[in-house]
Image (tube, rainbow, N blue to C red; front, top):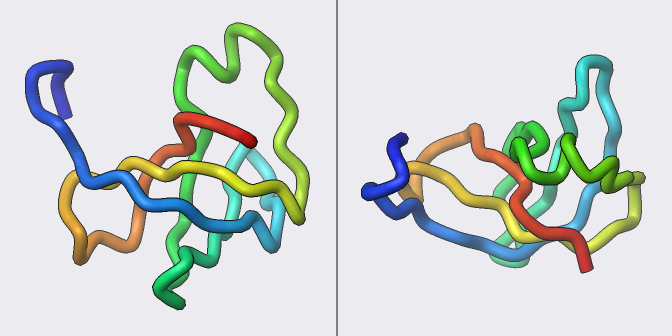
Length: 72
């Protein structure tokens, strides 16, 4: 996904941290996705732990993978 293409953003909660900066996120609509940290979050050492509310960006609404772009 390039910068010009916008993805679908959804809010959810991290419920499992996996190796390699991967996280399982349960979205507010009940769907579960596998998400990794966005580049800016890695560069700025933003820590994400289970229980955190996050915004996940996915290429389309039916995708099962995405990236975490913001932590609340």
